[in-house]
Image (cartoon, rainbow, N blue to C red; front, side):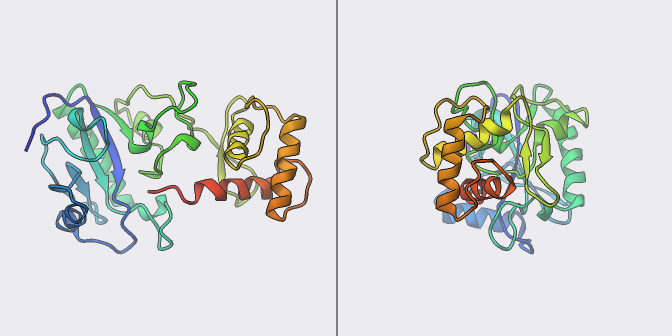
Length: 246
C-alpha cells in the first residue's frame, strides 16, 4: 500500500454510522470494502468510548477526501448521524472529543507541517468569494466547525476561510450563519436554488427578493408576507440542508 511522502493536512471526519453502532475498525473496514474499496479509508478512528484505533495505517495514503489523500491524515469519529439518518453533532461523545484533541496534539508533534480542518472545509468554493459557506458544503461531515474548534485549543489550522459565527433566528430555531449581509445572501442563494429569480445575490432584500420570497411562500403554503421570517427561513433551509450527507 502506498505511503505518504508528506503530511501537511489533518482532516477530521465522522463515519456516518448511527447511534449505538460500535464495531470498531473491523466494522468500518467491512463497510468500506463492501463499497469496493481496498481497505478502510481512514488512517484512524475514535470509537464511541473514546478509544483510538489505527485504520489504514499511520503513513498510508488513505481514501477519505478526494484530491487531498496523498498529503493528509484522516481521523474519523464514529457516529455523526441520528436515528433519522440526519447529521447530528450530539451523537459524538465527550470522550471522543477529548481523545480527538489529544490525538490532534500528538499527530501535530509527529507531523510538524500538519494543519487541521474538517472534511466539509475542503468543499469547492462555488461562488469564488474565497469563503467556504454552508450552502457549498458537499457533506455535513464532521457536523461541527473543526477550524475554530482547533484554533481555540492552540492547534494549527488550515488556511481556509469559512463562516463560523452562528446566531439563532428565534428561540429553539436552527442556527444561521452571521456576517456582513451573509444571512440574507445565503437565503437568496437558497431561493435561487429553488428556481426563483431574484436578480443579483447581494444580501439586500429588494423588490425582486421580496417577490421571490412571496412566490416561495405561496408554493410552501406559508403566509405571503415577502419577508424572510422564521417560518420561511426554516422551510428554505429544510428544503436544501436536511438532505446533506454526513
